[in-house]
Image 1 (cartoon, rainbow, N blue to C red):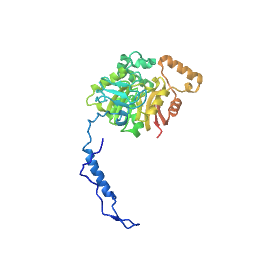
Image 2 (cartoon, rainbow, N blue to C red):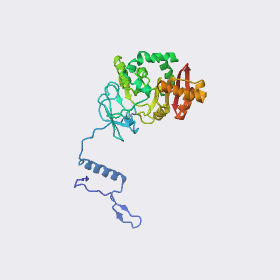
Image 3 (cartoon, helix red, strand yellow):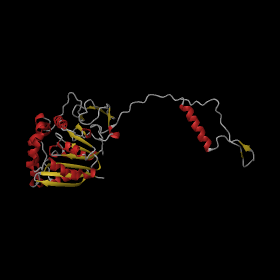
Image 4 (cartoon, helix red, strand yellow):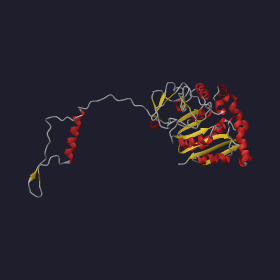
Length: 348
């Protein structure tokens, strides 16, 4: 585009200055800073009048950079761009779509949750998971989880959801007001408590089981005045979390670690997504004593639990070592029988 200047516009000259060597009077155009600024302003004014304006392109929101949930592609770990106007909180994800900025894969939401597993959208491939994971994907176990299944954990020393929630809050004090991922949330027992407490700006209820997320959705729909805008339901693999690195303030995992196919992979992922200073809190069953010190018994324990459904019961020393090797520090734990609550944080 050419800049057009009116034909009657002429450069001006200021009064002459004496040349120090010859004494002659010289006309020096555009010599003062004030005049140059004035001329520049006039040129810009004229040129603006001839600029052809174009319609503004629609702005597509990038969740990783502009949102507060840090959602990312589980394949590339790069930010997801929202392609639709649908909000991402519970009850509003139907019709929502997100696309990876790198691999261009698109992920969709249904009535209950966003589906952010790596195999999302596949038509022929269906990855089978360990027995215990598949068990929690069934409609029967998902329905029974808060109707007797979770309550039976009291026989293993679990103090009950309300008490566990109070215990977890003490560990989470440094990150209150931030976002929290309730990993392996099941039917959302603790996700709902975190949301109603108002202690966090966003709660991501995350589980691999579609039926568990369905139950979570139904429980939320039954509650009056529930803060839905603070909760997002996400289907994801604990070993491939769909969040950008250093984007999460806290991760909670209630009665879940012993069910993960690979605890080391899962805790490494949790360490990756936590911000510096971020907190990891988890409850699980613990098994130590002679099993933790005698190599033969340790192997026997793993074989038995494998037959029983791929559970992994670790000792206190193993849990601490697991957190340390995955980059987490400040390990602490509280025990009651087989129950243990552990906490560690991402190094600042």
